[in-house]
Amino acid sequence: MDNKKFKEIDESFICEVCGKKVDKLNYSSRDHCNHCLSSKHVDVNPGDRLESCHGVLEPIGFEKYKDTYKIVYKCKKCGATRKCVMASDDSFDKMLEIMKENSF
Image 1 (cartoon, rainbow, N blue to C red):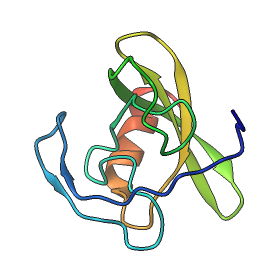
Image 2: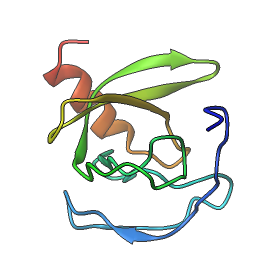
Image 3: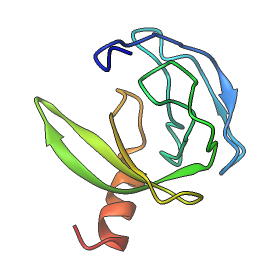
């Protein structure tokens, strides 16, 4: 399998962590909640939905990436770490809260 493949999936959903409705992103794939920044461990490669874990990916930090940031996640079920680019409508207040909690 080519690890560089990216399957775009842009769907609305209800976040299983905070319970809020998350709308489509409309410019790329929606892969995390823009309110609490949590995600779900469902992909091996972006958009493939081949991961069997299905645990909650908890945001634990951030990395500078080009002119934005990547969210660093740790899976609460299997402990794997993942990263994804922040969306334009992600909560800046939640980002600051996570940074403060994790001393970044």
